[in-house]
Length: 123
Image (tube, rainbow, N blue to C red):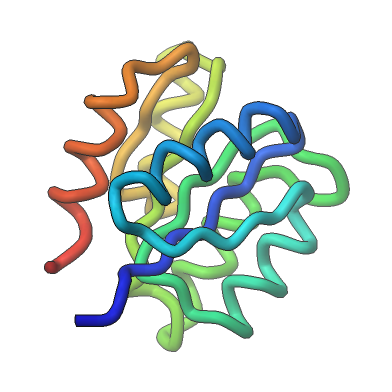
């Protein structure tokens, strides 16, 4: 069976690499993007099985990336996990409004992230 592909979007390169390492160790193929524009381009070109998306990104924030993917029928079915330090109620509400499938806070427990990925990816 082909490996499930996950796009990890975070402008903190060390954190993105750590997540990539952890997810590869669990059998996933990882794509990386470090700004919102790159995230949109990679998502549209590669059609990953899931996206882990930071909110505070250069060029285009995660809300905009999520919203643009979710309103396009070609990409709307890709599960998106918002992954951020922004924990205010209005931040979470906005994440829901743009169509995010889940909202995880940094710092994170790797097991919580893995469990959420398994829940959202149809394996």
